[in-house]
Amino acid sequence: MSLRRCVVAVDGPSGSGKSTVSRRLAQALGASYLDTGAMYRAATWAVLHAGVDVNDPEGVVKVVVDTEIVVGTDPARQTVSVNDHDVTREIRGHEVTGAVSAVSAVPAVRKLLVERQREVIAGAERIVVEGRDIGTVVAPDADLKVYLTASAAERARRRSAEIAADHAATQADLARRDLLDSTRATDPLRQAPDAIVLDSTEMDIDQVVAHLREKVDA
Ligand code: DC
Image 1 (cartoon, rainbow, N blue to C red):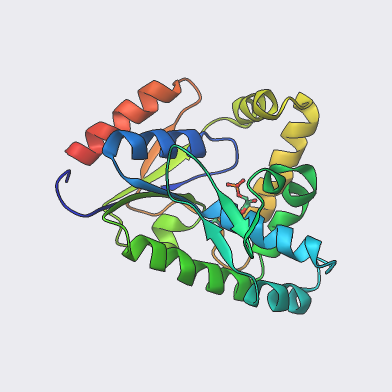
Image 2 (cartoon, rainbow, N blue to C red):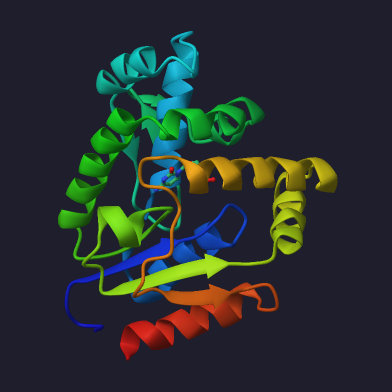
């Protein structure tokens, strides 16, 4: 697979290690990297910034239609902008994290962002794309589909270490987002039937990346 065009889809719940694994895999493959969660976060930032209620789907769509979201595809350096304003750091804050599930559940928002994601994928030679619906909706023809998961306790442990937050509060927040992301009507988090399922609870990042590199080269 290594010499031709290659699309790798990485899906899974929050805190499963998707971002680190996807970035590292992209670097190892000399590929681009697309973080679709960053696009939903940027859309959410735009909605909050416009002072629109995230539970008002019509208002949300109006904002997102008029928002230019640019997510860089360099795996070594993430950059996210909204109408030329750099939001790379702000989209990781509490406010956006607490509101992103509502915005990403709006079907018209998903339609718009999925179109943009497909354009980025079509323009890349080799790309690792991470999200919740990549193998099922965005790139069902991906060359390799990975569903990365880990136990709820381990995911909360990793996430609270990453953001220096309280473990119990982080576990509760992950559980809330998992439930919203996997039960929404449009494009919920789901395993593609042809995805490789990897439970990383007992694995470190290097082991996961090495395992996936072997799959890409196979
Ligand atoms: O991966 P993340 O935590 O940065 O994603 C932020 C939110 O965006 C997450 O709660 C679910 C949503 N999301 C989505 O609905 N579809 C995607 N392809 C990626 C993320």
